[in-house]
Amino acid sequence: MNNSKLETRNSKLVTALLCVVFAGACAKAPARTAPAAPPPPPAPAPADLARGWDAEHVSSPLSPLVDHAEVVRRLDEVKKASPDLFGVESIGQSLEGRSINHVTLGRGPFPVLLWSQMHGDEPSATSALFDLFEYVQRHRDDPMVRRLLDALTIHVVPMLNPDGAARFQRRNVQSIDINRDALLLQTLEGQLLKGLRDRLNPKIGFNLHNQSWRTSAGRPPKPASISLLSVAFDEARSMNEGRTLTKKTCAIIRDALELLAPGQIGRYDDDYEVRAFGDNVTKWGTPVVLIETGPWTTLGNPDPALVRLNFVAILTALDALATGRVSQADPQRYESLPLNESRLFYILVKNASIVNGAGVAPFTGDIGIVANRFVAEDGGRKVVRLALRIDDLGDLRTFGAIETIDATGLVAAPLFAQELKPGQEVTLPAWTAMQKNPWTLEVGQAGGVVLLKPASEGRYVVERVIMPAVTLEGGR
Image 1 (tube, rainbow, N blue to C red):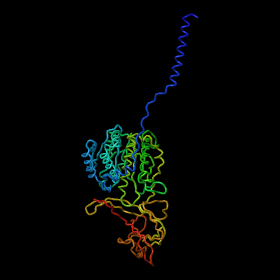
Image 2 (tube, helix red, strand yellow):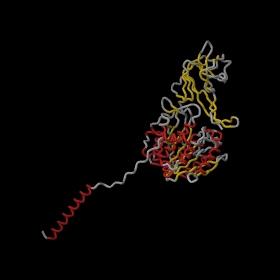
Image 3 (cartoon, helix red, strand yellow):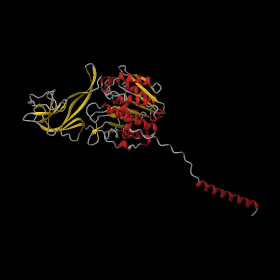
């Protein structure tokens, strides 16, 4: 072998050895990986947020009495107190000339849009939004609030339907349901909401409503105090990134609220409603979470408890969006919520001997009473009244109620005198088919009921009086 060939072979051997050595070294060297992202901060404790609301809320005790003038006054106060924190603009006017306002807070790259009182008689969330503003203002230097302001830009329209709110009615002054006007846009209010969404192009929206006090969740039925919906954008109820986000957001809300209202969170069927704003806003590119506020667990005024739930729900959801914690939520926590049903009465009288006041022979059964509230004038001030009505009679064992009265051994009769009091001894009138009481225990009649315990022959002791109308405290 000549020297030239020998040098070539040696060179190849050296090269091969170097490759083996470097390959082994590379195999032994640990792979370089990007540093792991820090976990998101823990969620705020719902009990802590609830206690904070108890101590600091500014909302009125009776949400139905919050009118446009109060909204404007509160917005002026918010802007004057923290002009560097809140932006307030009028985006237009209702048909009767009331301003529709847009509040902005935060400076983050993730825009969020919330709107309330699209239906004028659905006021709970409007009150909660002003409590949210108060909380942000008071706690602007707390880590959670700083995260909100740094990560999100929050846009809020409190009271989209001020004309309906002035009448405490669902529809606007045209008698159009704004929430069914997303396609024709014949309402000024709908046009303004559509224009704001198109201008902002938010990454998520919150459509804030109230639902009937008959709405129940689960079996046995319990009050559906809050119901949630990840809103669909087509008939097929297709999934995309936006709907995944809203399902995860609903899961976050459920997990927070069930600690405060166990068994009282429901879910709407996600059938697509082609005319509705939530469905179309989702279709236009802003996935929507629907939050519906329903009945509470006690009679009388439910507003403080329900506004408190709204406050916790909204603040918890915003925090999860700001921290990215929402990405870790399990959508199945939303999917597994019980579907809404209408199986709840305001008062359910069970197993009574019913004397209906129309000459019908007594029979044993249950009485299901519902309640509707309305705003009225009383001596120059506005008050909230509850009107009770008999909605069903008979075997109502599959229903629930805010209050259930076991009337076994008692007689249920129409309220035949306004002055009846518990403990009073009375005789029942001799009602006949020809001479019946103006109020009778029949479906559709006013819910005035007296429960009587038999005493001596033909005499009864008044055990309970259910008045057909109640005025709630806190009027102004």
